[in-house]
Amino acid sequence: MYQKRFYRDYMKAEGLVKFNVTEYESDLEIISKSDLKNEATIELKKYRGEISDYIKSCPEFLTSLVPVNPAEDAPVIVKHMCRASRAAGVGPMAAVAGAISEYVGKALEKYSDEIIIENGGDIYIKSSRERHVLVYAGKSPLSNKIALLFPPSENSIGVCTSSGTVGHSLSFGKADAAVVVSHDTLLADAAATAVGNRVKTPEDIQAGIDFARSIPGVEGVLIIIKDKMGVWGNITLTRP
Image (cartoon, rainbow, N blue to C red; front, side):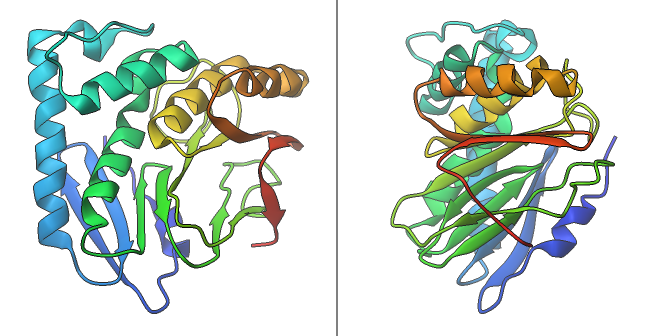
């Protein structure tokens, strides 16, 4: 069932263009220097099609909650999802939102050197400007009180969030927000799911952080559950 993504009302696009592209379950809010809706739609359909076609030949790819090995002739995006999910110890579809964000984002970079794609709480950022990412954590008193600051960079960054209390995505934990930062958006997505699964009480925050630290390629993690928060890594916190 579709849920209104009200948090998108907070997305600012000063000097840039904001537009939406939707294809079945994929609902992308995109910010760039120009309206690239047609180009984004083509790329979204392409990558969704590759994933959907692969699922037809390998249904386990859709349903598995543990890593699976891709076929030798699997599309690049499918193999990337499998690598990311294996690093985090979760099923490959745990990386699907991050995969769509990153692959569509990289495809659009030939048209705009400023690209931000938000896909259900999973964000791909390629920006030469300082960016703030607001942390929404449901009913936690810390919700919308904290933002992550990302300085201008020539490299893209992925910022992905899993929650056991917000949204419809599968989580075995109770974290209000488990946010993972990585230059690999697929890895950030899969790792956020894995971290969120491990956090059921505030006492689990340290275990979640320790697990995130053990994954090569994870740059940082932020965990919020109720009124408690833990942070590790290359993360700069700021006021919204």
